[in-house]
Image (cartoon, rainbow, N blue to C red):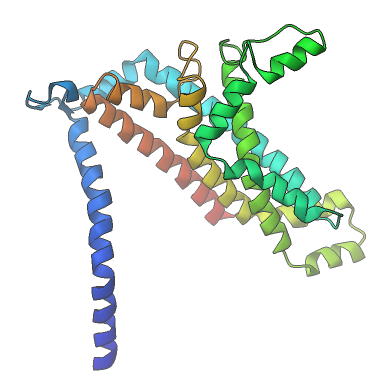
Length: 290
């Protein structure tokens, strides 16, 4: 009994340094963000003492037109890319799960976009989509179609960035869903085949229900990652033209590191955090319920 208590105390002692470091690196910044969100502080005028303003930053935030524009861009981007990446990833995962020649090579090629850093991806696609020297407009010229200002037009800029994100992160969906498909038990599929179930019935009533936990995990990770998109948009359009491609993350950056309004930026960051926690809880509750 004494030996077990000693082992337990030793275990707590061993994890204590890591716990302290993690606490300092997470709890202190989070607490300071909450403190800043209710104070006025211009970082460019650091000698001016911070004054308590209560909830005025949050009231201003919900009255700000730029905030609602950034919110709209964020959720339009989020919904479109997640849906396309999921359905395209599921389709390709089902194809790669079959016996076919060159399957390993094809898998490796699909993973290449995901291995590139987002900044490099943004630079590559900014060149491809350039309205003057871009490769895509060059092919348009060859087939006698007018050149398009893909990143310079309000009607196409966000769609172009969505295309780039789908190109880079659909392989993540393929990888996760393919791993899920290959881990499914074979007995239910054999029983369905014996009972005369069609391919669609097997997919609908066996594959999808068994794969549902994997699907929800993949969607959760991609939603969190897509929600905080910053680098590709910063490199490709910097939120323009106008604010048509400015998500919440870029709006927070502009408020903090361009206008130096750190109190308002902290309030924005806190709202962003609350939104993604609410979305994550929705996924988790749905997963636990099912």
